[in-house]
Image 1 (cartoon, rainbow, N blue to C red):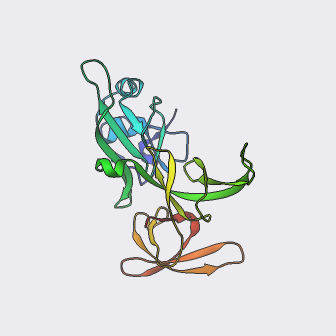
Image 2: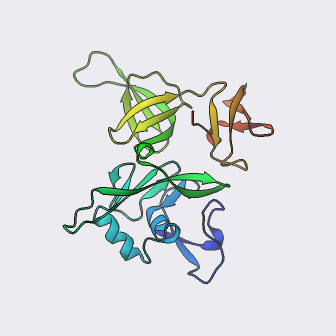
Image 3: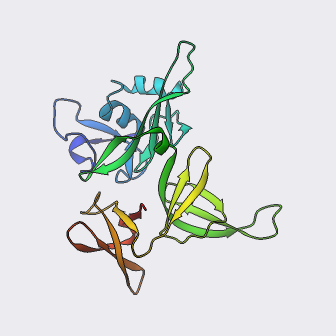
Length: 233
């Protein structure tokens, strides 16, 4: 895993840039603007461990899930709106009892782990970034494959468009619902200077290449590009 100076880490990361602790921090292999490594979250944010070795013990002993799936790599990249499920070991060494659930959200323009209840822990909202027709063995008709921003792909019969959001049922590993990118939709800004703010889709501006979206925030309307918005309702 690569390392960077704390003074060079993204402004969205939730720890001070200066201090007496080490000058360098570990960063995941994916874009640092999209999320944080599991090691960083468990050790530096939640402070459930003091060293990489302790975090690795937690992951190798199945005490950590991301979106209801065990992750044994402490460098696993946790992205915005991923759910972190933490378990404790019993006297027999089993660790299937989930005791804490957190969602990585944007609070006050910074990534933050927000504790959520068990009902919310099995769901995740992800942007749809692509769709294509695929042939499925044993079926006469072609099937639509949904490509999501977090790298997941699903075959679904639900109607959707690129730019919509998919509500994923992590327990059943399926698309539970589509949130359409349309006028009146509830929006969260996930990039740029308005990151973390919530608003409503007010209109769409057609461009020669692509579209811009007018979002009604708390006290003003702003024009934002497609990549910086996410439908949340």
